[in-house]
Length: 124
Image 1 (cartoon, one colour):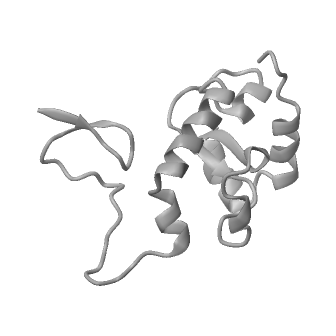
Image 2 (image 1 turned 60 degrees about the horizontal axis):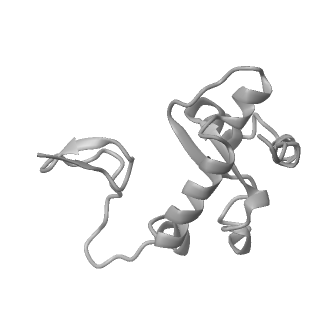
């Protein structure tokens, strides 16, 4: 029997442990950012943003490529420093794994990502 994984969204065997499952130390509570990432509010917002971005990486689309593989929703202004913006549409963008890593490491400027969000046409 298989089931959808709540950690990565892929399908796993029922008794299979996902590599993305957070490692919890007994008795230790996660940070508020970690707790938020597993919240129902975040799951709903993440789906809303992916739907808004048509399940495509926005950076790839800007480069005239259509990539719908390995997508995640990225906080342009980080949760750790801007927790109050955690559910703001203007702070969230759908990115592929490659561009998400580049955004996290600063190789793609936050200003560029913010501009890409502003320029999403309503009919898109």
